[in-house]
Amino acid sequence: MRTFAPKIINRQTVNRRIAMKVRVRFAPSPTGPLHIGGVRTALYNYLFARQHGGDMVFRIEDTDSNRFVPGAEEYIREAFAWLGIGFDEGVGFGGEYGPYRQSERREIYKVYVRQLLESGRAYYAFDTPAELEAKRAERPNFQYDATTRMEMRNSLTLPKDEVDAIVSGGGQYVVRFLIEPGQEVHVHDLIRGEVVINSSILDDKVLYKSADELPTYHLANIVDDHLMQITHVIRGEEWLPSAPLHVLLYEAFGWQDTMPQFAHLPLLLKPEGNGKLSKRDGDRLGFPVFPLEWHDPKTGDVSSGYREKDYLPEAVINFLALLGWNPGNDQELMTMDEMTRLFDLSRCSKAGARFDYKKLIWFNHEYILRRDDADIARAFQPMLRAQGVEAPLERITPMVALMKGRVNFVHELWEQAAYFFVAPTEYDEKSLRKWWREDAWTYVSELCDFIGESPEFEGAVLEPKVMEWIASKEWPVGKVMNAFRVTLVGAAVGPHIFALTDYLGKDETLRRARRALEVLPKL
Ligand code: GLU
Image (cartoon, rainbow, N blue to C red; front, top):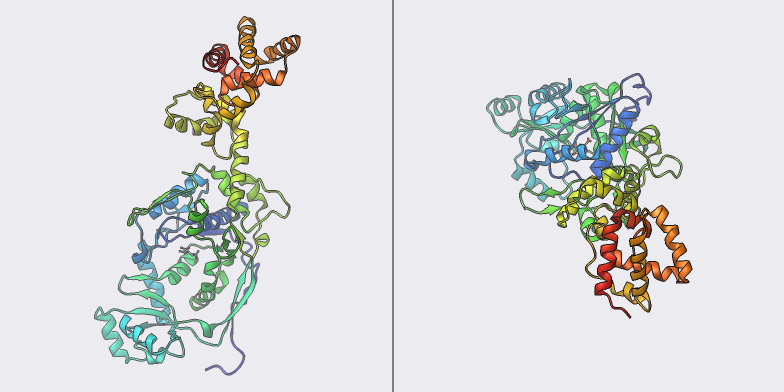
């Protein structure tokens, strides 16, 4: 037992890796759909790597076979393809440090498990689940550590020949990390500064399980970060409690000089700001917490995704970028290139970031405005088809140009602009009450004749002529034009009326107006 000043682990110099090429990784476990917080983590890694001309590695951490969910890996890759987050290397991308799926790296980990066993930094443990259970029942705050390990069945307490017999005889065991108590463990975090904990609070974590011949997350993660020459570990705050253990593992392997820099990102909070964002918040308030729709292979449950809910990927990206980071001014709209230039880990906050999904709707609106009209038209065409309307892109694009400023989602164009494609068969009651009175029928009827006889139809020419003609009749412009609008649209809404007549063309304009004259009353 230590009686004097504790040994200090990890007094690294912050700039020691300055000359190395930046390499980061995104390392999901395929246990289900990627949560939106994971997308934010991947994005920050991506921005950081791009900014430094570094590499971004995609690693699959699938050492826990009990939690493996089929389809999750494919889902994650499809999500990043949709979001425009690219990887340089990893599962599906190739590279020189593979394989990148941990279940395919069994033999590699065994070497390192052996190394820890041989150096005395780890030991075999044979306690059965029932024995551990009994111990926990006996001692409420039981933890497998320096205070208890000598009471357990492991290679520290059993005679060597017995241990050898179990191991070589194919008996089940785990390998546990031997944590020396009473040491100060320092975690340097690029966002949080220095975090210091005492090793006495840590337990002897299981690093390897003979049952599936695989290491646990902690060992696989450290070995791979080391072998793949990862320079920065940027991940969610939920991993911060594991960081001291990871520091101790680097030290046990003698890798402390090439240990990656840590950056633990702030938590995503509920829209109201109280507590961690969960799927239930999304269900309750009607927003997805997954990038793509997810069909649970076991339960058959379907969870909504941003893609299927008609969000633009650039809006999702821009929104997420600002959940925990800001560029130092109040600029909000940024392209991926701008974000790459401006991103700065030291401007990431420690405090949780409120998931203000309404802000995302605003971003979506802004990015619809910034997208090409033809692009939006392409996205809208299948939605139009689903409404039974077949229209070529040349007919959809000019509508988009006139109407996209009014919607937050592409699908809302149907609600806002169906009349561009389908002549009204019904007329909005409120609009009729307001505009279809007194001389409305006469106004529209005479306007139809006037337009019908006019050799020019193009709005730019027609508009001043119509205005002049209305003035000569001493009619109220608003009443004439709104009555006319109701006949074309079916309600007193829509774009500039002569932009609409240009879109509809002379025949369709007159057909709509004259049909209304047949069905609407002459008062
Ligand atoms: N496999 C872990 C996860 O699912 C990776 C954590 C880390 O980045 O170290 O998020």
